[in-house]
Image 1: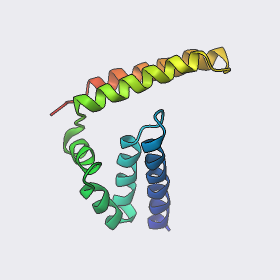
Image 2: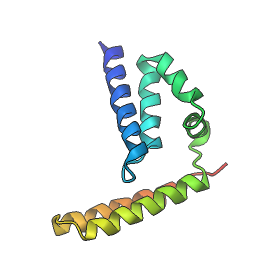
Image 3: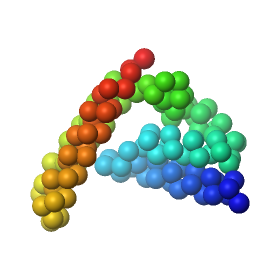
Length: 118
């Protein structure tokens, strides 16, 4: 039963990662990291495919090597979060969301910039 659960989670995270390729506000690599992690517990072939992927394999391998995040990825994530926070300010959402979401994004950005780059 557990391998099936890991496979379902891997597919879910992989689907979210694929959506992130076309939706600029949805991150790709974090979902692929989660997909590879879940696949490693229940679907080794998918894990190997993700690790060997020519575009997304290197960030997954670097993360596993020591939570390494490239400077370009940090900038891309930070700019995306800033744009998302700015757009959110003009969206018809409750004030609490317009305050809380950018604060969470700021915390994530601070954490992200503390990750090693090499």
